[in-house]
Length: 72
Image (cartoon, rainbow, N blue to C red):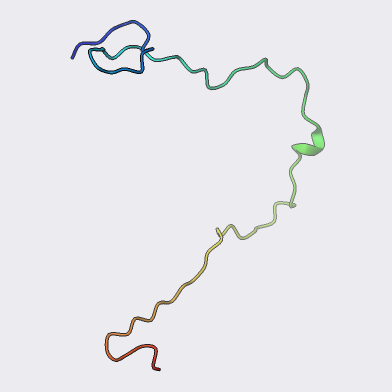
């Protein structure tokens, strides 16, 4: 396969080669210069156990294999 090291900047793919894409910087910004509040990161709950179930819903299906449903 032939490719190019130039930027892939043309929307027309006819007679074009794959090129390099734009580099995305996922995380950027200055490092934080303040500390978080102690109340925001303190442990809570007194180390007591708790239920960790995800929300769920039970659904029952009744499929009639014989007869006319619903009866009229």
